Structure formats: C-alpha cells, structure tokens
Amino acid sequence: MLVLLARIVYLTVYERTFLLKQGNARTVRVIDIPAHRGMILDRNHQPLAISTPVYSVWIDPHQFSLQDTQIPALANLLQESIKQIQATINDKSKSDFVYLKRQLSPDIADQIKALHIPGIYFQQNYKRYYPEADAVAPLLGMTNIDDQGQEGLELAYNNLLQGVPGKERVLVDLYGHVVAVQGIVQPARPGHNLILSIDHRIQYLAYSVLSKAVADNKAESGSIVIMDIKTGEILAMVNAPSYNPNTRPKYRNNNYRNLAVTDQFEPGSTMKTFAVANALDNGKYNANTMVDTNPGWMILNGHRVQDEENLGNINVTTILQRSSNMGITKLTLSMPPNSLWNLLHKEGFGQSTHSGFPGEALGSLVKPRKWSDIALATLSFGYGVSATMLQLTQAYAMIGNEGVKHPVSLLKIDKPSASEPVLKKKVAIELINIMQSVTAKGGSGFPARIPGYNVAGKTGTAWIMGAHGYERKHFNALFIGIVPASKPRIVAAIVIKDPQAGHHQGGQVAAPVFSEVMTAVLRDLNIPPDDLTQKGKPDEIKPVVPKPH
Image 1 (cartoon, rainbow, N blue to C red):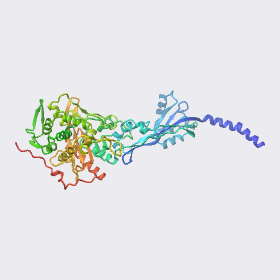
Image 2: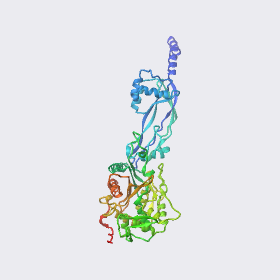
Image 3: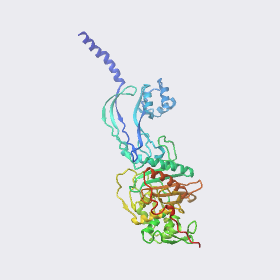
Image 4: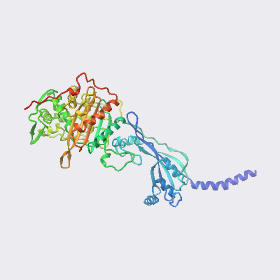
C-alpha cells in the first residue's frame, strides 16, 4: 500500500513536472512531404534526369541566437561567414522563417543536426541531377531550386513530372528535430517518369563531334538533329556550345537555348532538293532531263543569279550534285508559280512541327500576291524563306519515307501517328537516287561519304542576315543526309553557324561532321550496309560534263 501511494505521488508531482518541461520543448507541426519528381529517361530507359534527396536548413529568428557556442561550427558547415549568416537574418528580421542554406547533402544536414542549436529546422526536398550534363542540357532544360521545370522538356512536361506534395503531422523538439511522426495527413504522390525518343549513346556521340567541329572551325554555334525516318522519333538533338545544368554557372543566354528548335534561318541550297522534287512531281522533268544553264548567269528583275562557273548543258541530277543556282532557277521558273510554295507548305515550312518544345519557332514561308521571277528564284535556292533545323529534318525524312510525312516526336512511341502523303512514291525514290550524286565524286557533299553505305544528301551554304542586311563574310554551313540510301532509316541535319577558320561551305564544314557521327550511329544501331554491288558504288555516279563554249 505504501509503495502504491509513493508511486502516485511521484507521477503527480515529479513526472508531471518533467512532462510539462518536455511539452514546452516539443511542438506538433504539420510539415510537407516532398513529392519525388519523375525521372527523364532515354528510349532504352537510361536516366537523363533524376532527383536526389537534399535538405534545406531554415531558422526561426525569434528562437535562433548567433551567440550560441556552436555558431562557428555551423558557419563552417554552411561554408559562410558569421557576418553572412547575420546579413541573411537581418534581411528577413520580421519573418518567422528564414532559409540559411538550401540543397545541402544529407551528410552535411546530419552534422548540423548534431550541433543541437535551438531555432534551426530542416526540410527535406530534392535536387535534380543530369548524368549526361552538357550533352542534353539545351534539350532537357533544368529545374529551379524548388525542383520546378524552368527550361526545355523539364518545363514542357512539368505537370507530368512534378507530382503532388503530401503532409504529415510530426512532433518537433526545441532544436527542430523530428522526434516522432504522429501520422500521414495526406500522402505524397510522386511524379510520372518521362521516356524520350532520344538514344543517350547517339546524343553523347553527336554532342562530342559537334563540339569539336564548332571549336575547330572557330564557329559561333552548331546544331545536329537525328531522326528515325520510319517513326518520326528524334534520336538526338544537340547544340554546341552548351552548359552544365548540374553547376548552373552564368552562361550567355544562347547556351541555354535549344537552337535546333528555337532559332530559324535561311536554309540556302538545302532547299534546292525541294525545288527538284517540285519539278519531278509535276511530271515535266526526270533525273536525266537536260537544262541549259549557259552562260552561267542571268538577270531577273534587276538582280543577278549566277553559278560559280558556267556549267553549260547539264541534267537535273547534275543540277543538284553541283548545286547550280542557274539550273534550279530554270527548273522553278518553268513550273506553275504557286507550285513550289504549295509543296513547301505541305512539307511543314512556316508552321509548327508540334514537337511540344517550349519556344519553338515557326519559320517563315511568305506567299506574295504575285510572284516575281526573282522571288521564285531565291525561294528555290533557300532565301526569302526561313526554317528551323527540326523543320528541315522532318522534310528530308519525308523524302526518305517514300514521300510520306510523319509527325515529329521527342517521346518514345510504340507506333507512328497518322502520316501524311506529300510526294508521289516514285518521285521520292527518284529524288533519293539523285541526291546520292551529291556525295559522289564531283558532288558538293563528297566529304559526307560513309564507307559501305550510300548517302543521299544535300549541302547548303547561306549568308547570315544581320541588322543591316546580309553579312557577306558570315555563313551558315549545312548538310542534311539520309542513310542507308537503298533502304532509308536515319536522317541527320547539321548546321555550323559562322565558321571563321578558313572554310565556310556546307560540304567542307558540315558534311564531315555527318560522316563521323553517322558512321558510329549506323554501327551502334546495327544497320546493315548497302549492297554496293547492285547499282555501282556511289563514286561511280558521274556528273554530266559541260561542253566547252
């Protein structure tokens, strides 16, 4: 009986006092449960963007004191001076919530917790990490410090990726440590993963080759787009220079932009392919039809159109092979005035590709009320029209797909979406054969050749438009190619902007990039080589030699 009375006295007096003290030192809080952001994966489920756990350290200035003996240790862990901490607090002196540091590693957060400084609290969240870094940065974009998408695909698919935070009720001690979880108020819902059409091997390879080409040619920038012809899926989309989204230094804005989608330019001679397609599609010409380009120049509406040399009488194949302005102009002027514009419009120029990428440029394809001869001529060789690299890639993929255009996709798809016929099948096949002459001996794109494969392609060299007109010493160098030409599978488009190392032509600057990248891509994708014994090797295709005059 005496023991029982003693226990009652202890519980009512001593234990009650202890529990009151503990109750004053502990607080029930409802805190956020961060939602794990979905991963971005390549087509083979290799991670391109993942979220790793980190901690934010914050204080309640009314509970926190800089006089605490552990403050020097805190400053050391935060890698800040005590004066910097004081300045942070002073900036928000009236607030009950002040961040001291965000995105700390769990190890550093644990060391700060061990200091037991009153008024310091911790919040778990996530930090985005990009394993492929610079190679994917302009395409993926990045998140901000709150793990919300700010650029690129991170922004475009933010609602899908971000998930929904939850809430839980916890007991927090005087030092801000969670001592007990009392229950989940609302569970967090993680974000969904995003599976891209990108192949990380091809992406990294293309970025490495492009970066070197931009540096070697002392160029301003460069872009490559690689597409699966049969599905419309983008296998790689790279830009150089780029940036490392894991460190987020202060780069020029251009480095953040996905130039392949957001920038438009006059594509120059890469448009001649479509002028030839228009001539073939109208039934008036075939690959061997002769065209008189004498004397190598002409005047249209007071403007001079000319070739670098007089090519004389040449066939349609040689017009494309030698990239003849005279030949392509004569083809175009012999067609109905609206026919080339109509074909380019069907191919998607001047319109969105509906890629879903933020800030996609539309390009420009203006249709005048009345066509002048010079307007038709310049349109046929790629001036007075602007396009993005993605638009050009899609249009050339249509040629490789027997005249059928697939929608562009940056996401992996099981089967192609509804397709749209643009060219007659026989015209597309004939055009592929003609385009092979461009990479044959004597063709402007000979450096694009790949051992064992026929390459169908087209070079382009276009003046860059400046604030006061065309800049005569500044060019875009382009090459767009389709491989294997016998059974087209892949199209790749390359542009090098403003090369200043000596060469500026598409065949000299961009075509070698195509060859190096696509040699590796064909190997990695196990695409068998062409049977070069059937129709002769590509370098056996010879241009029609002009007769002397």
